[in-house]
Image 1 (cartoon, rainbow, N blue to C red):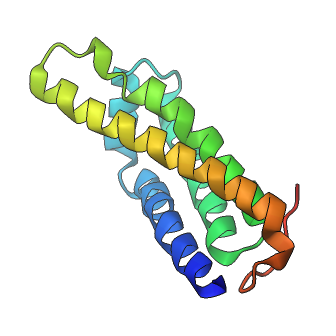
Image 2 (tube, rainbow, N blue to C red):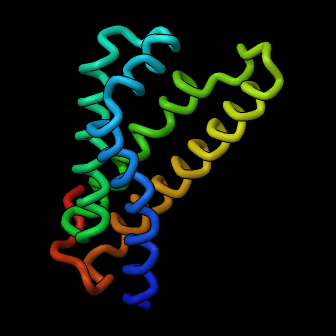
Length: 136
């Protein structure tokens, strides 16, 4: 089962790692989008959230305090669903549908991150193929 958990960690972390890197390669675009959503100090917020995602996803990916990494990802993605993908405010049907998809994606990723947190926190010392056990 250790290999299955490792594959799951890789697949789960890849979403956030690529997203975090995207915050550095597409900063201007993402800052403009954040501004349109009313996020203050959009450019620094994009850079900070990108670093947050990269660090947290690497913790999960490497199995180095994976419980902390999973919790950090949940803390990132759940508020993001409500702040950035508030589909209920959109009037254009296509944009509303797009935001609703992203909202539900973020909710499901947040739920998965919380489950991973519980898994690593409860059974972390028993899961192989990790650099460390749980921190919390």
